[in-house]
Length: 406
Image 1 (cartoon, rainbow, N blue to C red):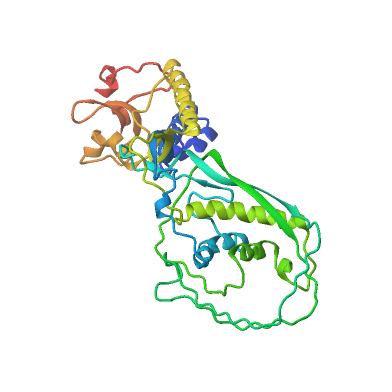
Image 2 (cartoon, rainbow, N blue to C red; image 1 turned 135 degrees about the vertical axis):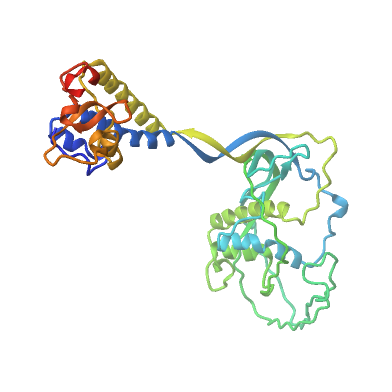
């Protein structure tokens, strides 16, 4: 063998060995190369990963489904509170803002939370709860006969103001001192109007849903003038201003009916979930709700690709081991001469290394020899002290039986 393997590690010597026809060395280098891939594959078989896991839990409603009639505010002429509550509904039509928690465009869902017996920290909860909506039906109304009215030529003074010391959303009634000029001309004119009628009732809805609530402490305020009722304001945001513009013809009754029904449904569901309606406390014997809680947990997963690569490499190891140890082979090197330490170890116990008077024309050989320590070694020594190892021999005689070695 006259090929130099010392310049490359075993993993990169496979090409050089195959080109030189050294099949056995090439196989060993290939095994060393696969060992690196196997180390990566075995390390990647099992991996930790956070995942969402669901568990069954008990839920309970936050309040009863009954209204607290004693806490309901009395009817008052002040509709500022109504307008303040319906700003979010108008914003939902104009800007697409989200409705309050537990409220959709059609239903208000009775809120729930984890039962007091549940102590698990969860990401989210879901369960079956009761929903309330308004089933309203509207249609157009036609007058049986024209209406004629005579207005007097007179003056009306009417001024409206609010007491600002309590705020626009004060729960108590507000007095209305009025003072406003009004001028009515004694002229004959016609009025274009469209009338619709509506009939509604509360409906119940059962559904599943996950609801997220966000805390908020800021007070709401709406600063525009009260040019019309809250229903008119929301309908203007929905279908435009043509239905109150005297210069435009009356809109189609179907458009007005559809908009009115939509506004009433959204306003009703929002009104129930806005905190204006007081509910009675939850009954002590209220039944629990079966639900699920989502928790983030760390689980161990197995990589199919890494497992397959590892199994294939180990199968190749079995085949190559059967080839190496099952075939009749001759002499094997004690170690691969791919490092300086491996080469030095082959000559360290030899007489040639410790000879104080080396011969200038000495001949060296590789094989078995008796070292200076008296032990048997395989390596490089003076040729006359070495029993050459033939690669075609299955067994090599001991160096002590060689007459030349003595």
